[in-house]
Image 1 (cartoon, one colour):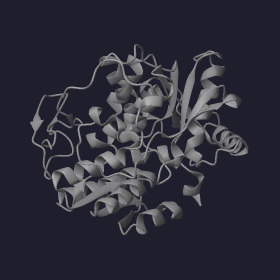
Image 2 (tube, rainbow, N blue to C red; image 1 turned 45 degrees about the vertical axis):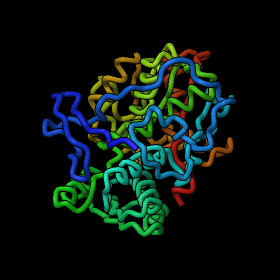
Image 3 (tube, rainbow, N blue to C red; image 1 turned 180 degrees about the vertical axis):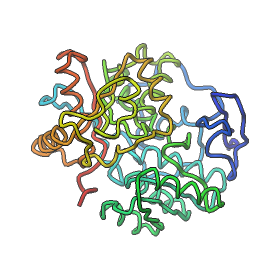
Image 4 (cartoon, rainbow, N blue to C red; image 1 turned 60 degrees about the horizontal axis):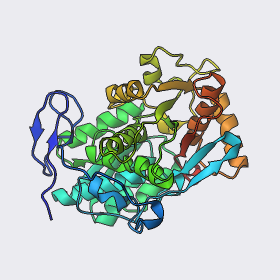
Length: 369
């Protein structure tokens, strides 16, 4: 068994030793990453010959974490969606009902590897439920900071695994501030889906699975929701790693979907942040993030892949959600953002009708009960 990977700041080069007291970001303010390590290269096995019984941990050679806190999650279905002329990756079939399990399994595995006794996290619901569930699997205490108006189903998912929800009045940013105060007081290890590099190690596997499920080929584009951008950046990092290893030979365009009124990436690109109805939307609560933790990196990923981002208002989200439900996809409202954006990108000519596109459906409709 190797020693836990150290952390490094890609901006200023500062290095930090691995341990339960390791910082959650660099003193310069930049997000930390795992120190460089070798990765496998060459021709991978076809999916039919891969042993996928370990789920996303099938790709353990790409993951800088050796302890596994897992329910054998991953390899979510990749299905044809002819009514959208795309493929949908059904991320809502994870154990806790959202793609956040990708990052939760790697983050809690990292926590166990470091000897952490208690974790804290801030979330609008899905990440909190995932971190709480995997903390229970690991036998660790967990405090999850959530908005005071968090959906009851997500609150119960946290409580029923014996984690402690801490409800905070105010904005989503107020929730994060309260959580960080607790971290600074030494109340736990910050298992942040927005800052912790272990979480992004997990979301990278989204790209690995798509490539494997498509015979190690790359789609022309991915259309993804952007809140903190954990899946967006995970997809970018995963496909870049596959390219660097010589396993695939191209990158998909990364096209983002944000909620109107909560569209800082769209604003940075000079786009319209208000959506078609001129107002902010309160439907897609999972991506109502005004200040993404790694916003600069999201913009870099968009630039590197000739991507884009658009904001979507309530009307188009409600219409798209109804359409998803009528076609058998029982997903939560935030899931409507990416399929709605796909249609807008095609209407605007950003995507051609024959472009090969993959869209994730990120959270279960059961999370909104």
